[in-house]
Image 1: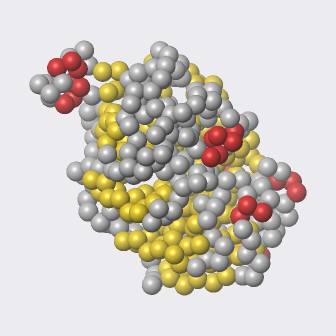
Image 2: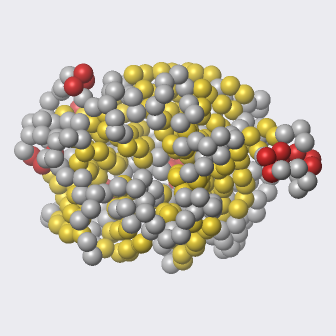
Length: 417
């Protein structure tokens, strides 16, 4: 095993910790207890990464001299650590509790990129540390698991005692692609397989592994629903997004972003599993209507959002019927789609239901908010909230815009799952 693990006494289950809801009550000591925390001039700060927390209610921004936490509704900065000794290229939250996974980034080598620190900000100390022989590409947190992604291997640890549970081999994965479910009753992980275009799905609770041949080209982006029953993927071509049943690997739907090759930056699935959002280097966010029926229509219920959607036919262990759900809108299609199977596949494609054109040319990660809204966080330090008409679709309406940090210096890292 190419890792070293060290722990501190007093490791607590994540559910018993405080939250970032009230940042004023937290001590102002800095990570690793060496540098002093203080507010810095944003002109000297570089944005290195942005990542949603598990319910997309807030996001973390890793900077060249620390990290910051932002609440989405209402939008505001709720917490920050400004350090003199280095920054973080990866900052991963566990919902809103005070446990974070930190990986160094930027030009300062105080915190190396091959080491993961599990930081308890309530105690102002590192409670666990993982060192590897190669750079860490991503970290994912769940209530029971810590998942660390290297370029060709994924390690899964028990959150309580930091013991290694699983090792997973992957194809070269420089983007650190990996998704975790966050439903209280399911434990699902999706990651690239060992063959081009394949996705490996681990159902930890069922002790079952499923390999899905999703695309002919390499996987470039993926996302799971909260319960892990549905998987959305895109390839390096960036023209098609496919939705799969993770239990049996069947393809449930395919939608088309466009005809030209594009780099897909992020994919998001709405909590009620009615909508899918995609951002790419073309500068447009696309919203698609999903045809997977879900039980219940109340997507605004907070507990429902945290637990994930309940799928019809969930007593079935092998399939989710791709039934047309009672959705209010449908994706656009060609007027010649009735000639499916005769004309080229392009003419039977499902096109996006709603769109938003972003004025800045930068990477954006997307997530769904309340009441048919979509949030977009840019790696230039910009935040957008837009709404879409769930009946008619079309161009989305910009509701809010904030410039939370000015940053013009690449490189950037994103975490969309």
